[in-house]
Image (tube, rainbow, N blue to C red; front, top):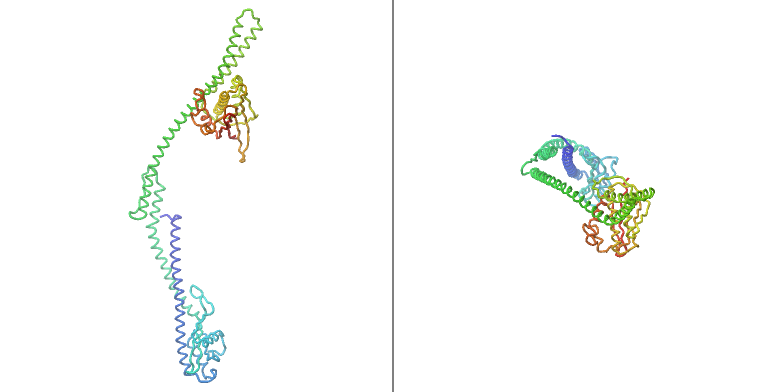
Length: 504
């Protein structure tokens, strides 16, 4: 078995808990044992004091206590008989006699006087000394009232040194310490063996299986039946089965989504292309007259060139004028072909102002014939990165919608379309360019604002629009990370705002 971080943590925690529990138990036992020995010592002192009291009854003579012959010798002998006595004091209510001529412990006399005056036994613990596992009292004074000679009341006190008792107790606790150490070793070995068998080894097997598990490996968890690890193994096996089933289902869904996305891209390209051709059709209808006029002019110049009496200068001048009109027709046709040509979408760098100029040049003749003023504001040479043809299609749709709105309003000679380009910075130092296309046409009904970008929604008469122009334009703008919005009211025109990020 490898001793990993979890194994070492469990072993360390087990040893810490076991050692702490045993040490706490032995500490409690030591405190109670120490108190019990002190109480036993107090009882032993009472018995000794009873023997001294009997001896005093035979020795005491009426009169002054100090005049009793041999009293100090008696007390001294009692002290000598018990080496743990520090002092033995007899008080008769007036004076006190110590076992020693020199008073070593004045506090003993104070205790014996209090006991005599109060008439009950007094036990006082004084001083500090190290006991076994905790600090203890160094000295114990036991004082109790006595009757001297059957007449006079007094008190007898004995002071005992407790340090010899603590020394003996520490010697006994050495054996307890060896027993404690033996218990820790035995219980640790047994407990660790059981913990390793019941917990660590099953966990290690599960970790090994988890590390070596593969979808096609067919490896499953195994554990003892009936135990929590057995139930956990069954739960993990069920989880693995569900994971494999979910994995297969996810693989199927991903494949289906990929096919659906391919179909959506194909349909979207067809929709965009259809809308482009619809826009071209509307644009071609407006340019038909512009193409017909140059053709008529060319036809007239050709008829003039057939006259035999023309001078060489007139012939050259008529030919150049006819060629100029043909070039104008060629430019119009090329613009339409470039716009309708199906090309794969790709990101490229381009100047926005050039696209705006191409669109305005494309509509120049149509708006002039319709009496509409088309102006461009803002000399912005911002360089953008994106689908050039897509954004060009967006601008063409916006201008076409403005032309239709002005024509629907019935304005002749008073229509105006304004294309404005503004570059700005946001609070995050991001650069954006805003393109707004405004007109003074019929405007927008408030109820239609939320439906303007819906596919196939249109407010135009049948045959004048497919309802896909704004929807496709909105999709193209969002694909560039931009925003598109339309605002306006009925009778006051409308403004299409296109915001595009400038990517460095």
